Image (cartoon, rainbow, N blue to C red; front, side):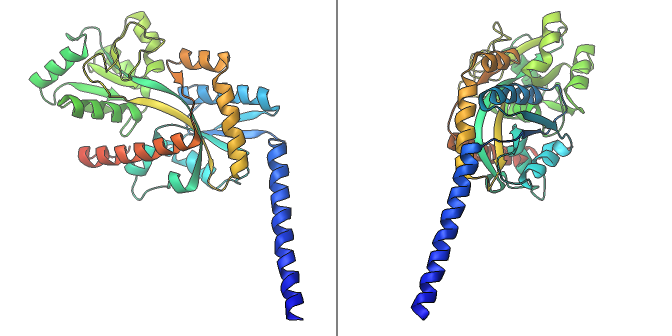
Length: 327
């Protein structure tokens, strides 16, 4: 009788595996068959929110289901990240992530999450460069002149950022190290108050993403010294890049990408990736990314996973060397 029981057990295992595979295949084929939630760790109206809504509209048109943006600001996006990590891994909870996903693993102790293990990289979407902008009354109008002024007065030239550990803050710290200068960092609670004080002359410089400073650059209230990207921005066609300013290979951009809970079925991830790649080729998505000062970046899921890993390592080194603490 033992061989019979063994055969029965084997058949049960095979049938269970077949049934599971069939359910997964049906799930993938029918995916999505209900609205998909796209979590954003920032308040409505910002660049990450705009990118998420733009991509969501394109995916909804392609897949015939709503992609609903859910804003969960707070704790430097950690609240949003943790909500996605603990969500059902079925492809119906996604996140539009940015640099904070990688940076927060270095900034916060103990480490609040492990994005490389607890999330799946679906697809990189695009990037928007950080810009260095100055009050129009300061005596320098180029990066070279700023560096000369900073070397003449080490630690005395201040720059504002949206906060300690924010992407613009880290970008300028990277730049300062590359340029061999010492700038004084003044953290603010968001980009708007930082920009306001730079316009008012309370401090000479501000670092923010390209979109935030655009109306003030157009009105002449601020002058943009450089975009920290290898290519010129569509909304600042006349502003030199950091490469053109003497730092070839340097880049400090805000990147955006879609992640999902780690156990999300691979076929679902593959389908999402393929649909996102298709969306990135549409005129609407390209134009919207250009409108916020950025560009789309097609690529594999592996490329995005490698970016998250390399960015975490890059931020870990900077946080340690510059002793950066989160707000």
